[in-house]
Length: 102
Image 1: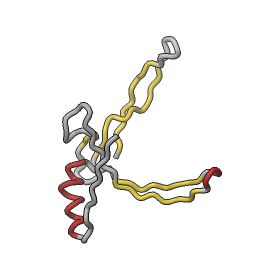
Image 2: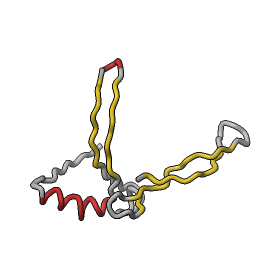
Image 3: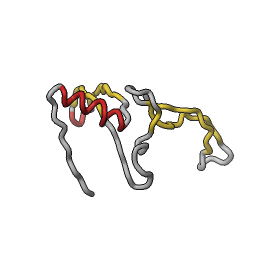
Image 4: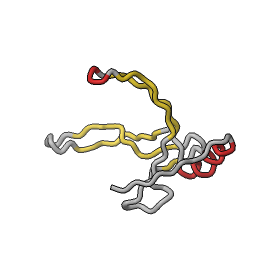
């Protein structure tokens, strides 16, 4: 689950204008219910760690638009590695890894 808090922010383009907005402050794992962000398990800086478990379905009409519904789970990196991956392997799935550089 995504976690938000209300925060007063300055709008730089408008003098002395402040407003209250919902600001994303982290995530709560749907399995262990611990709060985390996408770099909890690794050092800060240039390192990244993103867990994505989702199912997307819809209609694509090309240039005329489309629609989509996405079902997803927010899962921390620890639960992904130590709970979800072993569970999927026990069902016969084999993880696939892919390297990329840019």
